[in-house]
Image (cartoon, rainbow over all chains, first blue to last red):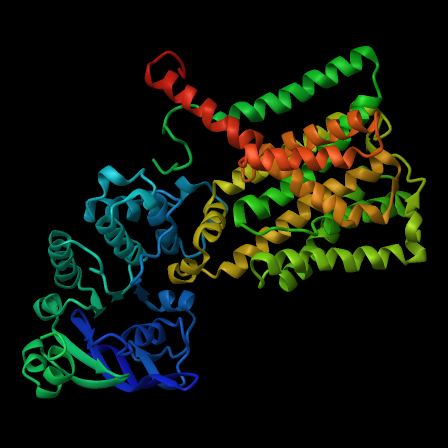
Length: 249
Length: 335
């Protein structure tokens, strides 16, 4: 199977700190690839490099065989790659519906920018679809800031999906969620890959969740790639156990 | 279904009531002034509307995009000077002077926007202030533009056959129609995807690039639109007063426009016009008793910011909206 995303020798230096050090791996189309590692392993920095938020010092990011290294975030979505944030990053003063509409406006590809909102038919249809898909029917008119943490995290993913990307980068999607919400999110992420054919790159602290839903796992430690493989291969890897699982007992 | 602004989806909008109250009230005022043959208050009200246009442009940037322009008088003054030059040196056509002022403001807005928009917060405010200071000082020291005296003896503008800007009631109505057009245009723009993106930029600019949009372009376009509104409003000034001076670009004019917006209600648009009317009227009334009217305006501003931080319309609009929603819900109104 063709990789949708290929990372080649990616590095970034912040002053004296080499936050990501020569990391390479592939993420396959339609599969869930997870990046795990202890705090400070460089996972979020890696995400920022891939999504265009930070320009790498060295290395390349290939998406669908195109070099997208250093592409700005707004162009990254045009290429087909979207991301969510570890700290919920919504428009808290706007309604759920408006959050989704803003994101879905991308589907209009710059048309209808100065026409009434109702004229953006593709965007509006996408909003209605996402509200149902994410079970937000009762919350559509509520301000995003008034939602529960779990609902905000769900909305965060829905906003990231509004532009119909081909790959989604999920940065700790279950952070701070209750056990029940985490379970629900796990099912939802699995559904996005299996039913909608979405390719997912996931950074997550919850190792059980990663092992349950991922097809491929990359382990990072101190900015470097420590290991990669299927969840079973990673779980049985001695250096991973020492560096990561050992720390968590 | 896709309207998020109203507390109750179907209830009439409170801001619409305030809009009609303002413009119908202005028409009634014009009718009354015409009947009694008043000129002074018609001229004063026209000035309030002109500065209301400047305040509208400030509200677009401050209330909708979250940028505090401390030098918006630059574009107002530019529009006024260009209009005065066209009327005095070229042709006394209202339409020609307004069109040339608009083009000049748009170009100046584009250049100023490219310089100022990359900065945020206080830095944007200071850059916009600095730009206005530079241009006003250049104008102040340019003999060909009348230097500190400005341009005097600007002839009245011919608007329609038989109507010039020297006609107090006719020019008041033309100014009212212009400001009404600007207000309606802005209100429409705010309910388009472009306008909603501006609100999103104000709320969380950091997220916008990850939705596939470059916030810089939206902010630049908003800046140019605001420059055009300020320039168009400024173009009307020499038609009313018959002169322009460098003071029109000074910080006091920019500062007053910000005060008009804050007193009227930031982000409400119509509040800018209420604020401008209120403060222009107050300045005239207090000014007839003391030359230190700025002290009274300053105190009023402090009181409003402390007691009604959302301004006049920002305070009254939710109260009226609750009442309208209640009436609508209980079936006693709205149909």
